[in-house]
Image (cartoon, rainbow, N blue to C red; front, side, top):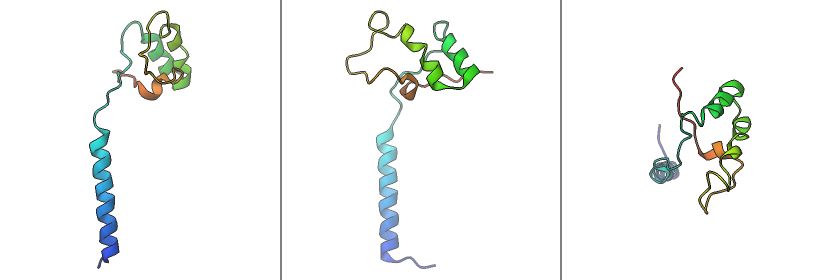
Length: 91
């Protein structure tokens, strides 16, 4: 099987883009939802329903302007589990 110059150039470009994505993606910087007594209800809802949206409904009870405040540059607060991953719970 022979590759043309265009094929080789395409492969080089694809490899370069993949390498760039891997380098830029790096390590997760967002904190995970702790597996503790305060967050246990969220884990229970997730285990029962399997729904991130159902689980997120309980976050605003504590994470608001009066109790656990958000940093000034925090994105919209209605999709917590889009960024914050839950810990792996041993079964």
